[in-house]
Structure formats: structure tokens, C-alpha cells
Length: 205
Image: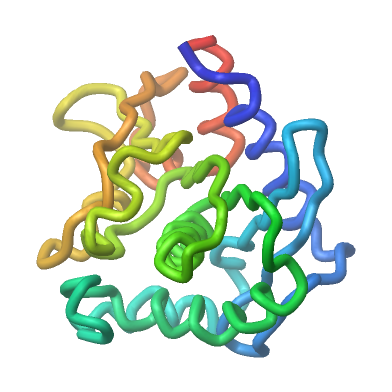
């Protein structure tokens, strides 16, 4: 079963992907994050990779292991640096609030990093909904038991979204929720698309 709150994150991500929305927090060339006030609470949604933006792809591929605080272990350098570039502004604006984090693709990985930093600072975390995130590292186990999901859409064990399996030398910070793809795709990137994630969630509801 898929919680309707997690399904709503697909819609929030789609709203932010349309190019017309203005980010609440942005570090040019690194990250774009949007604040949404929902019935379920405050949501910080991180935008995923925009196909025509070279800077976004550079962040995706900056996947070398990075060590920051030893408590976090090995990290995806690009996504962690993206999160660090806005976390102090989030603290300034939202300190003391219960905050939910979400995103798709690159944005899902950044949302996981932001959520872990938020918890590490002693702030109150709601849900973390990461849609088809790449591996960010274990993040010190800080998200292992937190509400929300990290999705992986697949048709079968041999046919699924390849993004969630990268980079091979890192781990996900929590167990993945496997969703059945609505159709077989010759191009596995079709499983990664936000619309496909929505359809898979609807089928699992």
C-alpha cells in the first residue's frame, strides 16, 4: 500500500519541474529547492535533473566517495555538496518546524541528504519521500527508521530503473520500496520517469 502523502510528492515534484516555479532556496548550478505548505505539513521538495541542464548532469556524475563528518560515512560528493549549499538557509527559515523532505531522481537523493543533516542538527523530521534516488550513502543510519519511502520501479528483477543502482560503490540510506512498473519498457530510463512512478504508485494504492 502507498500512503497518499507519498503519492502527493509526485504531484509536487511535477509542479516544480515545469520551469515556471521560483525556487525558495537555490544555489545556481547545484540545487533548486521549493517550500510547499500542504495539509500534511511543510515540504521541502528538491528538483531533479533537468534534461537540458549540463550543470545538473555534472552533479549527478560527481559521484566520488566523500567523507565529511565520520558519523555519516561515505557519501555521494555531488549530492552532499548540493545539500550543504542550502542547509544553513533552511535552518534560518524553518528552525523549530517539523519538516518533510521529498524529490525525484537527483532531487530525491538531495532530499535524503538534507533530511539526514536536519536530523543530525536535532531538528524535527516528518517524512522523507525519495522517488527513484541514486545512492547517496548510508548517511549514518539516520534515515533508516524514518517515515516515508525511497522508491525503485521495476518490471522484473532483471528490468528496472538503473538510476537507483548507481553508483555501485555506495549504499542507499534505507531499504527501497519496490513498485511494479505499469508496462514493460525497452528503454529502462522509462522506469525512472516521474510519470511512471506516479502510475506505479497508483497501481499499488
